[in-house]
Length: 251
Length: 291
Image 1 (cartoon, each protein chain N blue to C red):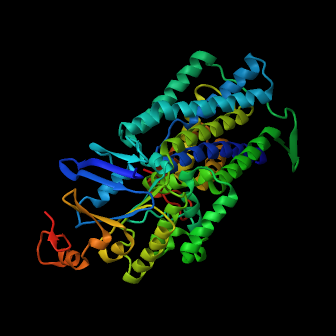
Image 2: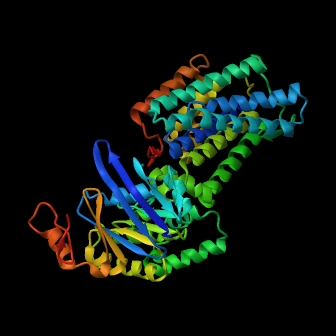
């Protein structure tokens, strides 16, 4: 049985269908990437899984349990943690306080356990240790991105949803971040990652799902995805992005 | 002069703690509560009823008054504020809801405990502190001590506890807080109950100096709100300073300027602050709300 199951999910913003009949399964320890052009519904699908937006149809199951109409706080406490595009750093609080708050969904922990988790976060992103006592609002974009990922891990979530974690980062910083995500994958963390930078994503993800017009049009193992076709689809002259996997154009 | 000063300080502590409630609620939930004065009145009246009518020892009367206040705050959140939130009501409707709660509280207290002003026994009756040849009522010192202890306890709660961090997170960004597992509804319940309990404690401690009556809710509420605005709405430390400014102004204006026009002058101060310093009189204060 998969850890996360999204079944026939429909999300609408008024008259606009943002996600249409999306279905996706994610296994324990698996990393699934979601690709697609802007407006394809990738972020909305993650937001619906995290409970930030309400689906008009379909369901989300965690370990076989239908999450129904649970709000984002209860889903977080169930083990689904979303790291949102736009960072979500709590600026006036220090870096250490942000991290400690990340452990909130996991319930009350002993000081020693909290300290151990902080240590893990600092080992994963050493720059955060140097910045621990500083207000999170003064961090650079790259540091803030690392902080929200580390904070998302503090509660030991069942599944970590990452919505464009490298958005706006310099290429080198983005590569560093994905290298850390690779370490998390090796440690067995289950992740769903929405990302525009296909090359970075394909290096980490076991599988990718391609979305267009709110639908998941294809899922494939990362090793089967032809990067050149993807690049052509994003950078080509066609106004309608033509995504392709192994040379086959997607409908 | 010293007597006026001590009265001003004790009133200032009361208004400061009411303002602290107004600011803490505004900061963590975005709700502007006009019901905070009701909890001061409920604390004083219930405490006096327990001590005078039921013959309860002072400690039980104090505990009962604080519990009644906390329960009232919980009821305000559960019965009015949270249902209005869930129906997507505008901030104006929520403010109206808190005003309705204030009027209902006054009427319930009037009908159940009567219209006569009541006093709670002093904690150390008859004991006075003598300074420069003048006597200061011990109850004033209890009010001061309570203000310092409540302020310190709130600081520890906000800055050192897990739930305090959740409250601060809600004040900064409710969506991010929810993604971190923090329930704004639980935070609101706790904040309303906590600030109501503080208001009730204040009502109990000031009742031996200033009688409590069902009509007291408005006066404490308005002056607490004035203190919160002067200190910068949403600024917890500013609220206490604002309270001291209002309390001392009230005492000195009442004695040296005019007791007839006292309220008019204080409300004039409120208008002046709203027009000239809407972010409060303290340097660097910011208006911050969760919603």
